[in-house]
Length: 408
Ligand code: CAA
Image (cartoon, rainbow, N blue to C red; front, top):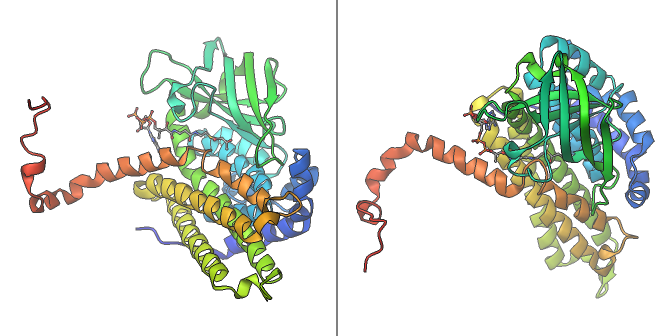
């Protein structure tokens, strides 16, 4: 079983991210939430500080610090602003299909461009009629000579309009069941590729989420990930296994950030002649909030360490556990932080309502938490054989001899 492993390098990147979060992100978080705009200074800081190369292996131009480091960076950024946290994390999401499925040549080209901050990248999987059922997508890529011609629409493209590169999943073989979908890289500016709708969101407002449309978009066949069609669904699923610990880290960052504001306020706000922090009811809330954050963080680090160790047997379930558990915690803790601020917490002048709004989406995107628990349950059922002897201890009368016909 892989252990939690936090390298010196990962701690270094956490520190770099902390500085960026406090010096660049926190002071402008409210303003960009209101304006619903991507802060240019944040994009520059990501590139200048080398943060976009954290998870990319050294041989492809990155720092090779791994997924634990990525999660620590995401947590620090999200602690200051959930929108900026995902604006950063989505570059990892967009680049993972290249990392897990690209050819050496593709990795050397595109990952190096992402690592240097020269190009941002987005992930185009979901569609209007294919959300949880990612495999039900309709966007199609048809091979014509040495080009793929892409037609269709993608929904919820985070970083869309900002990103230069897009990993797009499209149907390349309608008649195949398990080899239907392929991943293809599409560059911004390719004729026929447009951003049609910028969503007006409840939270994570510093990062654009858009619809991307493909109208006879022609890309060279060399942009097909891995050079072999039909591997796209697997690559997308592996990508989500790598990326979900990062969403979990976003949840933990939001929870930690809201908790810190709640403590700061509770130490200052006075009612009944004493500050809130000295009241038992508030201490009970703060204690529960802090314990939840710590539990979620442990699970994030466990899942991320399993990805770094290549522990394939457990990555799928741990990523799903970390994602669902930590983002549910994010919702609970940020809601409690608003509660501790009382009526003021509900107001936009105060910082905590934004944490609550930013937290909500983490329970939904990169697979709803209901899908995560389905993934966990499927894993449990797969391993049930290893403890099937337990059936010997359960009286058989409740399940043997069951007749599906109702008894009159
Ligand atoms: N790794 C590798 N392969 C995998 C895999 C994994 N984790 N999970 C499934 N597969 C393979 C299976 O082995 C199977 O392969 P074969 O056909 O060769 O047997 C194939 O994929 C199909 O698997 P399933 O039958 O399990 O597929 P399914 O249709 O039942 O779907 C699902 C599974 C887990 C529900 C999946 O569709 C899913 O994760 N849905 C949620 C989608 C999602 O997370 N979307 C978020 C988009 S990103 C986003 O939100 C963007 C943003 O803005 C941040």
